[in-house]
Every structure is written in C-alpha cells, then in structure tokens.
Length: 171
Image (tube, rainbow, N blue to C red):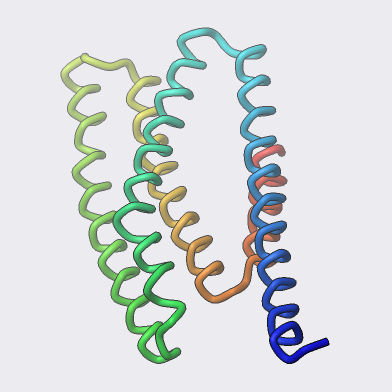
C-alpha cells in the first residue's frame, strides 16, 4: 500500500461512516414522521389533522431558514478553524439565536392571546398555536444541536439523540 493510499483509506472510512450515519438518521426521522402522520390521519378529524400539518409546515419552514442563515454557514466555516476560534463562533451564533428566539417567541405568543380574547380563535385553536410556537422553538434548538454535533465530528451522538427523540415521540 502506498503512502497516499494509507492516508486516503482512513479518510474514506471516516466519510463513509459519517455518510451512513446520516442516511440511517434520516431514515429513522422520516420513518417516525410517516408513522405519526398515518396514525393521525386514522385517529383524528380532518380539522385536527389540518392543524397538525400547519404546525409541522411552520416547523419545516423555520428549520429551513435556520439552516440557510445559521447552521450551514457555521458548518462550512467552523470545522476548519482552531478549537478556540470555533468555540467563539459557535458561542456567538448560539447567543444570537437564543436572543432572537426569545424575542420572536414572545412576540408570537401575543397572536393567540389576542386571537382568543377577540373571539377570532377558539380555546383549542389558541392552545394549538401556543403549543406550535413551543414546538417550533424546541425544533430549532434541536436542529442547532444536531448541527453542532456534526461540526464537532460526532455523527453517532447525533444518531443516538435522534433515536431517543423518536422513541420519546412514539410513547
């Protein structure tokens, strides 16, 4: 085996392991979402399922925005930096995201409160919106953590966290 092959082989194995972990992770998450969707279709009314789909769509939209503005640029720039600078970058992005999410969540929580008191929404609809805001906040925090695990080269920890998350959601 030549020197370039000896160096390329561990790199190739590492990439293969990370890629396969990502594929397994996506299969687990997509499978769980599919099963939950089927159960909700069978066990809930059309209106209730519609509210679920709206919340799930809002979560998907917000995560896409977070990936485009924060996680993807951080995932490209941070791994090549020295550990101290990487920690500063991650800390700055996390602090900025936390501040933004607090302010955006507080403003968003005004909407269902006003909607309920103006009799625009029922109590159930207002509760779904409040819980949807909480779900969006939680999903954004989870996705940021998943991105950090990938930045720090810990795809197996990400897969384990996702498996625990799926197991909790199936209960």
